[in-house]
Length: 290
Image (cartoon, rainbow, N blue to C red; front, side, top):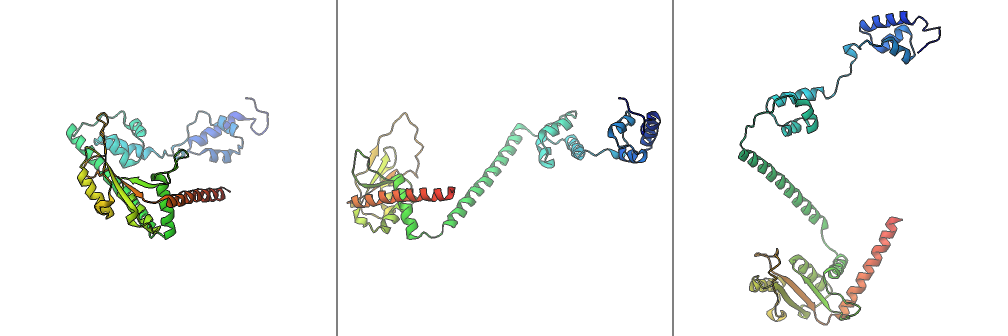
């Protein structure tokens, strides 16, 4: 690249000065200021082939990590252990220590499996504690229910789990079915709120034939506090041998059906209330969106 005569005309003489300053340990900035060379292209040509002094080299932030990783590897640490200790990736560790001998296995396969199992059990314990803590915090956040809140909850609960009219089959019956005692308890509290007398309720147990039918009948009778004459004949479900049932064991008590006698008017109120909830939710959503 040719340069016009003038300030940098005597290029070779200027280069000799630049090299001498470089070898004396000066930085590019210092050489530039000493020789008054403001053009970086010219400065690069002046210093071409001359390495920078050590003190100007920027240290690599990972040099210390690399040295520590190699040190730990020589002590027999695994990649996992080094990763936990240094907080760097396994790929980086592998790159840094791949020339070092693999540490000898100090544990039997059984010992390694036991350690892994213990670690997994600890993870499960921590996870279960977190799950329990979240549920308890959510439970405490509910507090007391107002009558309005219980009313709305009961309407939604029934519309999700209760019997509903079909356009081709208008029955207007109030029938609720569930296997969860908590759901049954909330539904009964809702009926009490609506002043539905308990003598208007009829109960039916629905359960698989392979379960303890008698125990289930006694459980539900005690749970709802109803007399035997309030219970219809238990409905027994035939077991399909081709299916594998998971709802088994001592805690399986089938489902409880609750039917409200003379419930046509109550059903109409439930259906109307549900449509009112849907409309209110739609309006609330619209206001949130806008």
